Image 1 (cartoon, rainbow, N blue to C red):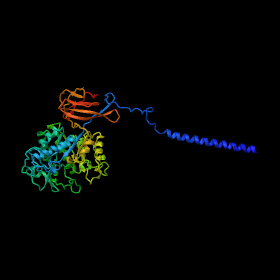
Image 2 (image 1 turned 90 degrees about the horizontal axis):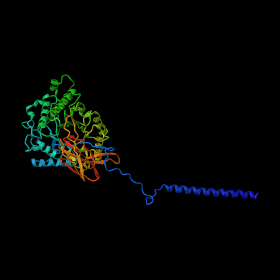
Image 3 (image 1 turned 30 degrees about the vertical axis):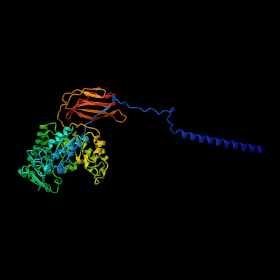
Image 4 (image 1 turned 180 degrees about the horizontal axis):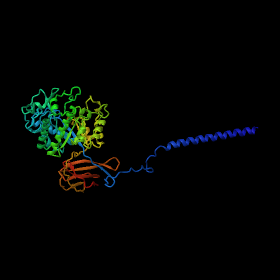
Length: 507
């Protein structure tokens, strides 16, 4: 009996010892397993894996090259002297300020200046049809002693920028303001309508449409402008009323020319006819001059002043449309994203270059614009849409002010040529034949070239795609590149550009 009991106790001890040994082994295994998850330090015996480097030379057989032109415009406002001439008086001071503003825009890689030359049926240029603007001298009709439009054109072109003459077609001025002796209101008092204390040319009169076309004709014939630009003022806000259709008193014109159609349809067609008449005037003189309009940013708002941008785009009445989408992305009732997509989708191939509200930056009234990344996001969205070719910034003082450094460093890091808008048939220059000697890139002159553009390629992350960044535009036939960089050269004839012969690499 004792022997049996002894054997049982002995077996229990063996089982206990075995169990303890198992638990110790299990703990050691868990510990070592956890330790094995720690990275093995680099060293002579454990060198880090090699980093795969992308080739520095562009490969035409396998790589993708992205080269885009972008319309980068700023409105230079002269109404109320906002951007210019401000407080400057006299030709010398005004010229200096104009040059300063253009220099600042150029530094931000802006390539189009929308220079306001007609604020209220007046002129910032030599005209036989309307008087000199009072913003130049303090008195309407007084010669400032120089030609601001000519100065602006020459200065912009010297800086490689386009100059578009910006006009307000219908606004005449306050009903009680002084009008110079040669102002057309004295000759044609039956042409205007007074609405809320302001005179407007009556869009329903054929004579008014002809007068506006004559204004544009005078500018296009006499000046080397690159474009004609209209803003968002057509019929005045408040003129469209269902309860009182004649709150804008054009009853007599409607009775004479309305032909029985609905008055709102008639007014819209009046504007359409003016827009098309101006286009035909421009293209009959200089087909290459670009024609664009900047209506209100939502189509519904634009229609309250009888401005149907959709009709203009689909009918090719304009070369581009610049809807003023002056709200943030995510706005509850006028979302930038929603509106830009509307215009993009309705464009029928007409380029869209939305207006951006630079004036809201830093204004506590608009908290969504307190961070400049809002502008970057709007431009990035613009660049992602098929029919959007750039942006217009309102207005110059706000663009070159506190927002300027952000635009330069984050939005317009590189130069850009202006895209070709419109249907005119230009002359495409020949292709430059490029050679490389050391770090010097050179090419011979080609037929039809006014300038040459040099692009430096930048690989996009670690993909096979490269951005072509514009580095220089000049009349020179040579460029000094950098080692390890890829370049291409094209010839430029105004907005017509050649292809490139090849991408060259500087080893």
